[in-house]
Image 1 (cartoon, rainbow, N blue to C red):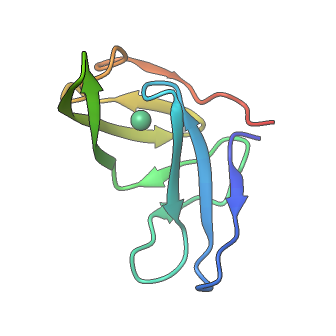
Image 2: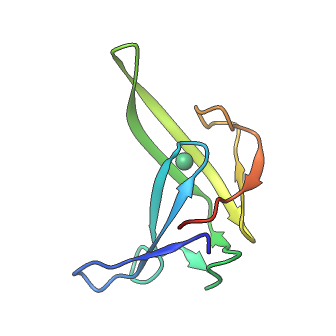
Length: 98
Ligand SMILES: [Zn+2]
């Protein structure tokens, strides 16, 4: 399994995966108005469209804007060139979640 379901009180189903680029989890809604397209396969997930995540990180005490932009297709994650982490431009397997 590469996804873990996330339960919430709002009735929206979400899934979580561990992003090897950010080394932190990303959570996507798969039902509701803002849902991603999802093939329903927790072992080899595909999401559409791309996943763009921005957040504020830190570099030697200074805040920096971090970008993680990816396509997840059949259990593999393709990081686009605008990612700020070390896996930009690479495609790797999504890790298994415990
Ligand atoms: Zn990420």
